[in-house]
Length: 66
Image (tube, rainbow, N blue to C red):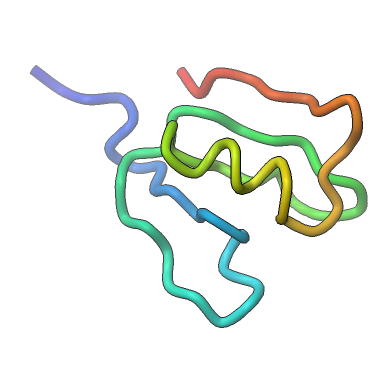
């Protein structure tokens, strides 16, 4: 069985912009951001990304990565 999520890795909790390493779990959500690339995150980092990542739109634009 192939996993379609295996290529997308979580960039949480802050999108790797604050010097923190990526989570490494498969990304399940994509969060839209202003003037930045969308942020792909796992379910664990979805909440922190919405609250702490730079450029997140409000109301947030969240899509399921498929």
